[in-house]
Amino acid sequence: MTGTAAKTAGPVLGPTFAKFWTASTASALGSGLVTIAAPLYVASQTNDPVIVSAASAVIWVPWLLFTLPGGILVDRVDRRRLMIGLDWARFAVMAALGVAILFGHAPLWLLFVTLFLIHTGEVIFETASQAMIPAVVPKDLLEKANGWLMGGTITTKDMIAGPLGAALFVIAASIPFLANAGMYVVSAIFITLVPGVYRIASGPVDPTAPTVGGGLKQGLITARSDIAVAFRFLMGQPILRTMSILIGVLNITLTAGGAVLVLLAKERLNLGSVGYGLLFSSIAVGGVLGSAFGDRLIKRVTATWTIRGGLVVEAAMYLALAWSGNAWLACFALFLFGVHTALWYIVAGSLRHRLTPPEMMGRVSSLHLFIVFGGNAVGALLGGILAKQFGITAPYWAGFAVALAVTAVTWRVFNRAAMAKVQETAANQAD
Image (cartoon, rainbow, N blue to C red; front, side, top):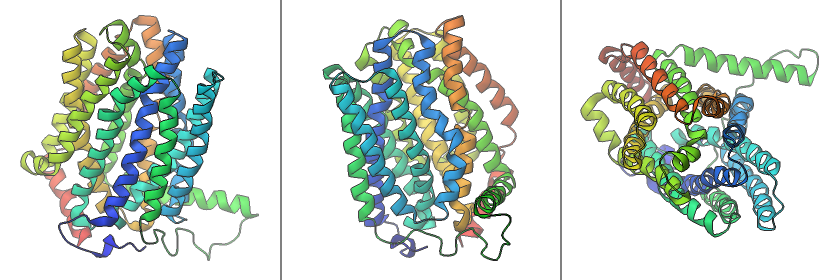
């Protein structure tokens, strides 16, 4: 695999990363606009929590279905070219939905189908993006690069897109969707400007493997073998394994709460469309601060207490949303959650990038994303069901209970000795 910045050491991330970052940030801005606009559009048609939560569920189904196949694909093709193709495909699909909404011919089923297709592309795009990072920047700058990527994503997807998406939706429901389509074009252009070839020369396929009963059957056997190798690697890394699994568990309840957040904002916090967008901005402000100072903060407090403190913050956020109807307290809790999210991304992502061999980076990244996001579709529907049966705060009380249980079970796993050992291993592999 080649890439200009991959061969250039130094304290500066460089122009190649700047183009990569711009593409990622533009894509995040567009996705953020629809993240806000889609539930608002559904809520404008119905107040049924289950139907509202279905908009979130359909977003997460592709992460369950296509993450692992996407990882295999990413390890077999040029990752940069794949991302460009996905951007143009998503542009076409989202532009069609935006036009349909503009002319008043967009039933909910069309929105759901579009969200499914768009996020199928996002699954593979995100896997390819994660796999490219170690080839775009030197390994000693991974924390800094991941911090910049996280900061750019949070700034645009939540801080800017939150209130902007809501405000644009108020003006005309079609605008956020058309703007998202435009951001895919920007992303495609900047990924095109990234120099280099981002493909493993030999690929994960063994050319000497015997043919077993035809191309399709052989392909399935090879794919299963490729995923098995990545699975054994990830399961053999105790810290990475634990972080993937616990984030996956926590994300189920996080998605449950997020799926009905638009109704919590409306019915309990007494916020309108713009106020709902500001809740996401609160997460974003925390995320930007965490991203900007994360590498220094993690060194000061250690990775151990970064992870443990984050678990406590997540539990506290659920408690605030479940217990209080105060919008300011909700915003502060979401702000702290944003800080925690950024710090976790830096710690987990940098360790994974250092420990994973380049030839299986796509598959390991996809396996991590599968574990982390695979249960989110169930979580989204669970949020709607809990809210309908037990009240709008039920998903947040459930999240609080799960966060407390996860904290208690994993507290000792992230001790100083274990974290020091895995960081030493990562440093040795970087050398």
